[in-house]
Length: 232
Image (cartoon, rainbow, N blue to C red; front, side, top):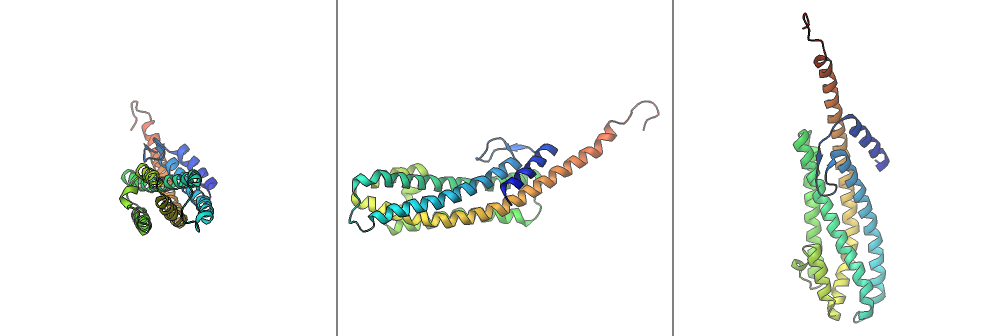
């Protein structure tokens, strides 16, 4: 479903019910519907960014692939592309964790409607593990220590350290080129998971919100009934 349609559902949910605020790492203090729609928006943006970045890194790689070493004067542009890749990987993993937190928060607030959300949560965890494993494999393939690339900060530091030697520059570019390609596929998978899982959550939260409003409306006449003599 398109974001515009999701936004319409969001508006109905927010206007008809007071859904509790929570913080999962994407929007601090957002309501559940707001958080769910924002996660959908972000994964679409990251998937597009991955495709663009892969094309840019591939172009740079094609320029130097036949060179014995990468000239140092070309490195600033290459380094900038690799830094963008590192940031994208970190953002994508952060979104996966945030989405899993949203699932847990919805379950804690509204209960478990079916196996759908549990399966979704497990799928997000599997996605993150698979991504880590694939990246580690690529790094090791080019003689790079995967332990130095565990976080955005350490990965950027490792790239900077490798840039001091011609062989290191070649290795991180080769690894980056492959990682950029796998990120396109990985983010397509994450986008599919989040679109399906968050749509299920959005529908469930909206249903629960409307149920609460209906229950509240049925209680209001009783509370407002006359309480004077002869009233029951």
